[in-house]
Image 1 (tube, rainbow, N blue to C red):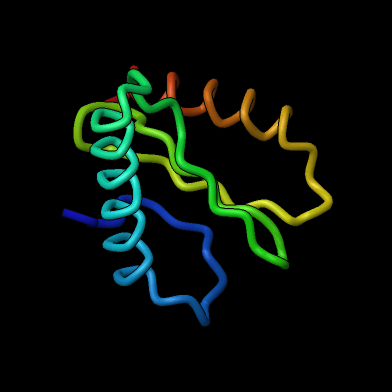
Image 2: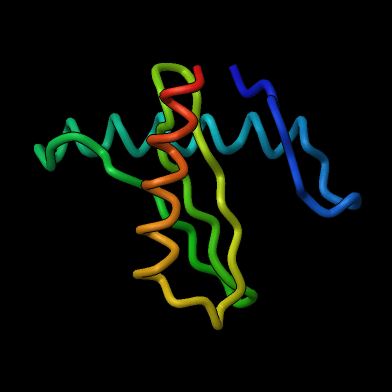
Length: 92
């Protein structure tokens, strides 16, 4: 549904819009992976000129969005995001 649980987004970013778009992107990624027979989606990554937005499913119906600068080491971001999603799933 795109409801924000917690956020550390900059104030100029509309959390409601981001929540809805993020949920839609992850949902489209899941459907595309199914259609293309790629297996279960691990993550959806958006790479822009200023950095990355990484979306992972934390638990059924809950996702985690992580934003990182373009200087970030993606391998570490993937690892830390996966660990955080696992911890979130335990709490929810």
